[in-house]
Length: 507
Image (cartoon, one colour):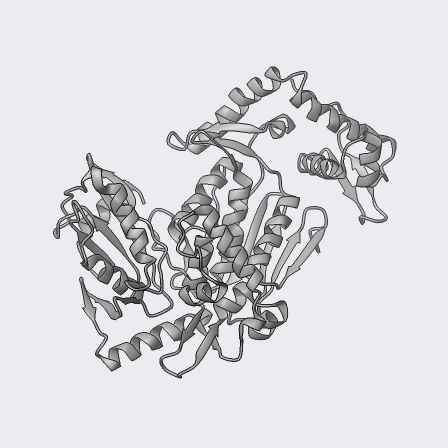
């Protein structure tokens, strides 16, 4: 959330999706009612350290960390807020005054505060617990809008992979040693996260579709979500069909792993220093792309989602329950989780960020990786397009391992100028007889081997050059990306063609 966006929210005034709280020294009790009502209506922005008329007051800096801790802990206390929510307060410096902001996403379930149900109307939070009609309307609105909440009363724990529940628990605790899931049994975890619920309209009770998608056995997933399948394709040489293909129809925990691995095998990994930390930018892009296609899709339709890797882009498509049409602008869009339960679970295990942060990360890291911008187009089919063609100058730049990028001073200038002028010279010249030349000589040996025998397989190349098969595959990807070698014909009966045979130099 940018300072300019906060200024706009303060100028708009309180309303259906905006609420101000003073909270100078502590969290007020009314915060939890607002979080609950936002979750039950359209979601909303909660800003602390602000008067009712939108004037910044500021939060006492001495108590900020304690307020953040209390906020997170209370949202994970099911005696206060149920189901639990995983939200964090973010600091915003507004003209020297610190404000705390959180975007509360809409929930697919009925959210309660201290056992009471609140709904949002204009700029107020209203207790509707004793109104059977209003509660019924709320339940109908949520159950009809979110297919992840469909209950399958005959599915028991025998149809779920409890080993994956335990794995997810370990992942969450690895990120946060004090995570609320710590010490829970698999059954307690499933129930506390809203994956086992009661349908207030029909009286059904049991595990919902979100639980089955996350942890179901493959046969159970196919039975309960027959239209669910993700098709991953590589189209670089054979653009009419494909060079490689992976059909994924397993639970979302393992589907994520398989799709990440597919992207990793067929794209270049590039490391950059982002805010003084060494980051695999490709890994971040793949994470956002895969989590989006798994979490934010409409599972009621028989539309096969796709991830397609081409020479100059990766694009993804999935069926969507659209609330808008057109290209998403990360500066002014409102987050809208299509499956809040799935999204919340992926956030807890570190495989996704809340919608706002995830979209902004995708824009940031795509600029660093390729110099371009992603396109996210919302409609009945949600499309994500990631440019992957490098803007750097030739193969030498692809040989570098780490490029410094200051995200505060601009990704593109830091990427292009630092990558070409700074890091390449320092890296190549500084390691002329070491790492860089090792990469370059290895590629020249591969090219020479192919010139002698164009029908060599990757394993034969590995034996001839005396390097591992995995390294050969990685080096060949680089050579193919740069148009130096090309595969003619099929993998079994085809051959390699060296487009331009010349020694690769670090100069």
